[in-house]
Length: 243
Ligand code: NAP
Image (cartoon, rainbow, N blue to C red; front, top):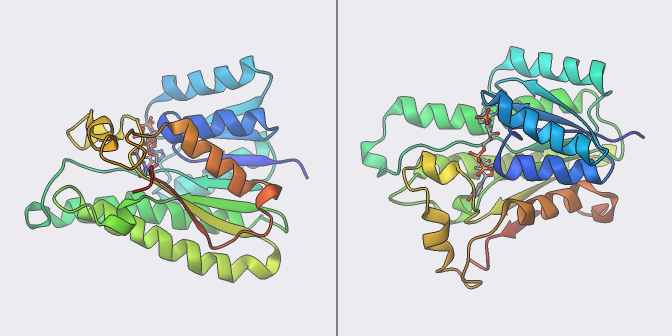
């Protein structure tokens, strides 16, 4: 089976590191992005420079029609998706719950949860025995992100439940579904929360006394996708420096 991976939101951060690693491991990779075409093109160029196969496709994966078109485009360019990484996730300015608008709360749920639902659904229409899905949750699902982003934490709690339920629905078909729960990883998502240096500041308080890298998360994702994890499903890998 030719391995075709879709990594949602892979123009930057954890997604970009995952796309590059999977390409090195022989997957044909779709680098999905929402708005930063140049960043996605750079990821594709880096993959091709190493002899890998990749294409960049713009799609807002929280929009149903765009997800359906994304899967059609991948099939035409690379073949049917065999491995899916639901990596897209957003957060907004740090805030207490009492100050959050309903619009913001719903926006986070749609961006983080509906995107995962839509991509899982479209992938499962074509996935067969041996295929695998990894969802990118967060340590926030365990910790709750008080005073910062409870909306984001709640969305990651939903990802955990979706992961568990879906893993049980498709296990009989030989399709595995797992999740990673990163902690404080050095990416630009923290700037969106209003504190670019948050990962460094709080990473120092973890048992391993530093923040993590996107590559460290990518390593766990690629292992969960691989046949080396062939007896692993419905599981969660915490990548949070011991916190
Ligand atoms: P990031 O650096 O902010 O990158 C986000 C990526 O998602 C970008 O490629 C962005 O595309 C894309 N994106 C956002 N919304 C999209 C949409 N609707 N459709 C398609 N693409 C979209 O984020 P990150 O830190 O790497 O986080 C990746 C995942 O890890 C997220 O699920 C996040 O919640 C999770 N996570 C991160 C940390 C951390 O400390 N960094 C910790 C725990 C969990 P554009 O470039 O086009 O905008």
